[in-house]
Length: 295
Ligand code: CP
Ligand code: NVA
Image (cartoon, rainbow, N blue to C red):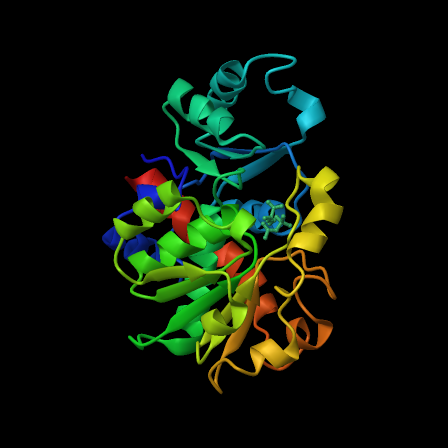
């Protein structure tokens, strides 16, 4: 059994195996008669529903737990919450503000723990993203992704997943919201296909995939006004998108803020694949959970 706290925990072969298990009927029913505890410190539409349905498809029973029901590190420690859930469940998923809380939960128990989004990373999203890109472009070896916006949890996992899967990725962010040199050094360990800068046009030029995420992530709401200011010029509108390759697609992990990081005619336009991407969250969750419990 294996935790999945970060996409960085996977080898290229692991990711390939997970992607294989995302196909219909490929994951089996390894959770038959067992439970999966899904703990959320933040709101969720896609992650909660895709994980619950993936657990059901794997033969298991999901129990979603809201923050006020368990009080991580207020009612009892994160470790004791995890130890309690491990008494009843074969898998624990957690969406947390602080990645460290997730690591403490994983260290406290033997059952596999999966990251359902932390401040650092969003591995289940990244698996669905690669699944969507490969669903569109097959095994083509010349696919480049441009991520325009905040160098956040989603972007950090996307970069590593792309590199593990042989996709090149360019990131354009305002200087104050770019990847740290530590992040960049870690990416270099996964291959040479990563580059970054602060010019969205340079990033998007002739790419096959244009991706963005919100400028203000959950937990950063008090910075929203300053961030809107800092990210001016980093919105993906039709003018920017039209400089991508003629067969380019648009991706967004959602929720989207039309008129901020993406224009309505891009996210709702013919090149958008955001609903396929959202559906793929369920297939990705099924593949990942099946892989985790089999390790
Ligand atoms: N993309 C994503 O994780 O969506 P939710 O926050 O709705 O789960
Ligand atoms: N970066 C966003 C992703 C939401 C799925 C956040 O952390 O809120």
